Amino acid sequence: MNFTDAIQSVFNQYARFDGRARRAEYWYFALLTFIVSIACQLVTMVGRSENTIALLLAIAALLVSLALIVPSLSVTVRRLHDIGRSGWFLLIALIPVVGGIILLVWMCSRGNNGPNRFGPDPLAAAA
Image (cartoon, rainbow, N blue to C red; front, top):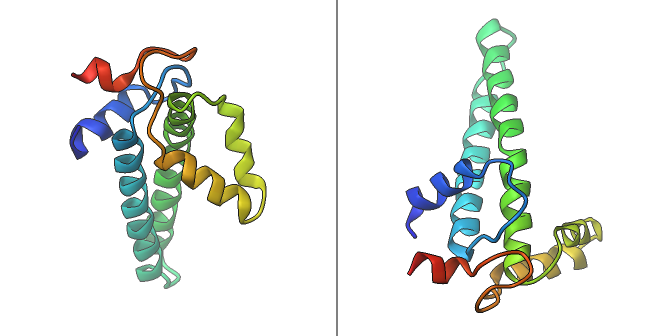
């Protein structure tokens, strides 16, 4: 799965919280989110002056950031499903430091081989 396939897959499943997501799908979308976040920060820094264009740029950056929340949650839940965990384990990220580290390790882990209770193996489906 390449970058464009992964991003297309995430947006095709924009608000689907069932099924499983491959590591590549998750990490390519995380990369896109990071790049968009940096771009939004740069846009808002450039438009620090008090004029209408700066305000419009800030609003546009906010809307783009808000638009990425649902697919980010969706692909993270599907990634947790791939390793056999419920989507509710996403809440572990609320535990300071330790929760983020645990979630990072899980996101880097290889998914379950074969089908699990959340659906078929996405690697087997791609082959």
